[in-house]
Image (cartoon, rainbow, N blue to C red; front, top):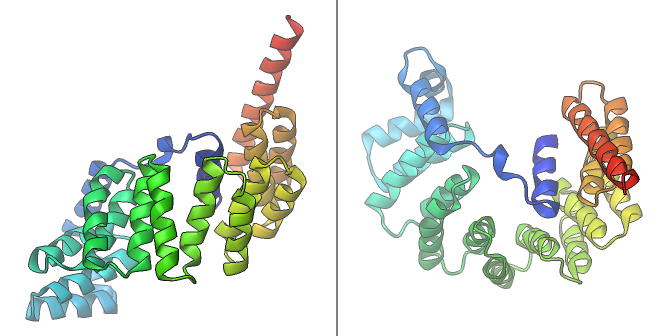
Length: 287
């Protein structure tokens, strides 16, 4: 969770999350090697996981689109995304109007860090399921990953029009408003919190909205409401780094490390903040 929270903060405030994405080819290759080798992770799942085994038996008996989709869902549940992708692809070949599988394929490609590959599938999903808020939201996230924030917002708004209770779309709209420094980002994010008050990601985005608006006290309060002390201090440190308040960032990272001595990422960020502060102080003193 901490790494994910860091990615959210970095993407919002310093646009530096790309380095954390996995290479699709190597990831898929690694997964397939596990599946193919005897007694390995994938083979064990196919024989030991009851739901996957049942879905595979159904597929063997009736190799139709629905059966491929069920197998794909089970592989996705187990985190074997290359096999999920393979079966979702088989489903849309057998049923070219399968909006659910198109949407799932788009999400997999997006989460692998290749939104260009996701775009066509996400578009197919909204064509074949024009009343689906989830599909509209997925297309919005793909556009956001491509840097087309205005188009992303349009699809988030569409998702909310289809389902006013779609808190995930409202949270994504909140996040997009933060990225574009909209003056009403705090208002949008407050609506998201009201819609999903217990969701950690919503609370973190509300904290980021306050930080982007310059209200650091409220930002810190909402980071604390979103998670444990170590995570809250770490996220506040990331926010301070984005504003070039390096000494404050170092203190926040040190506080995170005090709360959790095994939080090695906080230790690394504390060193980074300290070096940045020293460099800035040296530059200032030399003028």
